Amino acid sequence: MSASPPREHAGLTARALRWLGNALAALAGMLRGQVVQAVGGPARARVIGLFGAVLALSSADASTVGAVAPQLEHSLHIGNAKIGLLSSVALLAGAVLVLPMGLFVDRFKRIPLLSGCIVVWSIASILSAFAPDYSALLITRLALGAVTAAAGPAIASLTGDYFAASERGRVYAYILAGEAAGTAVGFAISGTLANAISWRAAFVVLGIPGFFLARALWRTVPEPLRGGQSRLHPGTENLEDAFSVAAAARADREAEQQSEPEGGQEGELARAAASQRGIAPDPRLVLTEDPTRMGLIRAIRYILSIRTNFVLIVSQALGYFYLAGLNTFALLYVRGHYNVSQLTAELALLGLVVGAVLGTIAGGRITDALLRRGFLESRIWIPAICYVVASVLLIPGILGSSLTPALWFDIAGATLLSAANPPLDAARLDVVPAGLWGRAQSTRSFMSSIAQALAPVTFGALSSLIAGIVPAQAPIGTHPGPLSSNASTGLEITFLILLASLAAAGVFLAAARHSYPRDVATAGASQQGPDPAPRPS
Image (cartoon, rainbow, N blue to C red; front, side):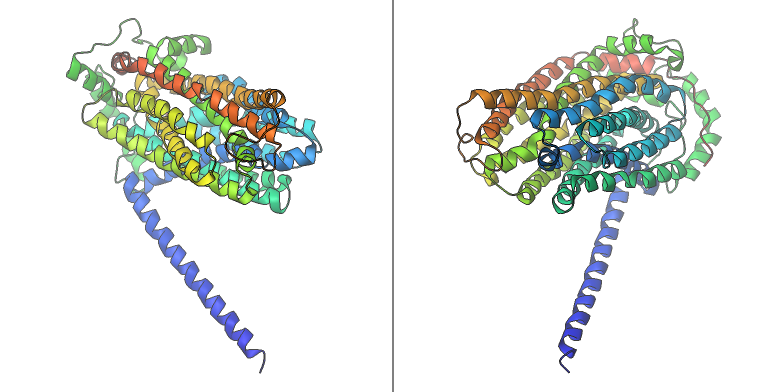
C-alpha cells in the first residue's frame, strides 16, 4: 500500500511530461507555419533554413574556443595569447583557401562542393576532441579552418541565384540569423559540456550534426541556374516543381534578356538607379565578356576596382575584427569583471545573441522596405549608422559596475552590429556581376578572415601587455572574479581601445553612398555569365 503514492506521482509526472511535450510540439508547429509564411512558402523556407544551418554550424564551431576557454586554460596550462591563437589559426587557414574556393564556386556546381566540405569539416571538428596537447589541437584547428572556406562564397552565390535583388536584404537577414543562433548554440552547448564533462566533449557534439546537414543539403537542394534563372518566387511549394518550370521557361527568359540591356532580372536595381536619378553605368567597368572565364587574379583586380565593393570589404573587416575578439574573450571577461559563475556568464551572452538575431532580421527587412520606397542608398546608410551608434553604446556596456544595466547596453550594441550585415551582404551582390559572386564573396571573406584571425591574438596580447603594466587593482567600478584583477582590467581596457575599429567602419562605409548607385547600374549592364544545367534532383 505504501508504494501507491509514488506510483501516482510517477503517473502524474509522466502525464505532465507528455502534456508539456505536446504543447511544445504544437508551439513548434505554429512557429514553423509562421516562419514558412514569412519567408514565402515551404520551398524558400527549406533553402533559407539549410543555408542558415551551414552558417550556424560554422559560427558554433568558431565560438567553441571562447566558450571552453576557462577549461582549456586549466587543462592545457595556457594563457590568453594562446587561447587567441587557437581561433586565429583556423581563420588564417580559411583566409588562405577562400580565394581559390571562390573560383571553384563560380565555375563548378556549388551544392556538391559545399556538401563535401561540410563532411570534412565535421571530421576535423571531431578530431579536435582527441588532440593530446596544445600543439595537436592547434593543428586540428588549422585543418578545420581550411575546409570552412567554401561556406561564405557558396552561400552568397546560391542566394543571389535563388532570390531577387529587391528582397536579398531580408533573405540574407534570415540566413545570417542562423549564424547568430549558431553562436548561441556554440556558447551554450560547449560551455555546458565543458563544465559537466570536458572541453573535448564539446568538439565531438558539435561535429556530429554536420554529417546530417551535408546529406540534407545534397539530397534536397538542387543546383540553381546562374544569373537569376532559378528564382524561388513566393508561394513556391516544392523545389522540384520550381526547377521544372525554370527549365521549361529558360528559352523564353533568354529571349527576354536579349531585349533588356541592363541585365535581365539582375538589372532591377540598375533600372531603379537610372530611372530615378539618371545614373548611367561606368563604361570603364562594364563587362562585355563572360566573367566566369576570368582568371582569379584578374577577377580579384576587377572586384577591388569597384569602389563600393572595396569600401564594403574594408568596413566589414573592421566590424568582424572587433566581433572576433569579443567572441573569444567575452566569457572570460564577464566572469572576471562581474565575479559571476560560468552559467550566469553564459546566460548573459545568450542575451547578446538574442539581440544579434533580432538585429539581423530587422536590418534586412528595414533596408529592403526603404529600398522599395526609393531610398537606394539605404543598404549603405543603415549599416554605417549602426556601426557608429554601436561603438557608443558598448562603452557603458563595458564599463558598467553591475551586470544587469550594463547588459542592456551590450544587447543594444550587439543588435546594431548584427543589423549591419544583411544589407551589406546584399549590397555586394548588387554591385558585382553575377558571374563573379563567388569570387567577390571570397575576396571579402579573405579580408574578414585576416581581420578575424588577427583579432584574438591582438586582443589577447594587448590585454596581457596592459595587465603587466597596470597596478594591481580591480576592474573599473567592480571587484575581481575568477581572473586576476590585472587580467580583468587588461581585457576591459583592450575592449575600450579597440572600439575605435567599429567607429572607423561606420565612418568609412558612409563614403560609399556616392558610388553605390553608379556601381549598381554598372553591374546591371555587365555580362552576367552562362547558365549551366542544374543537377538532377
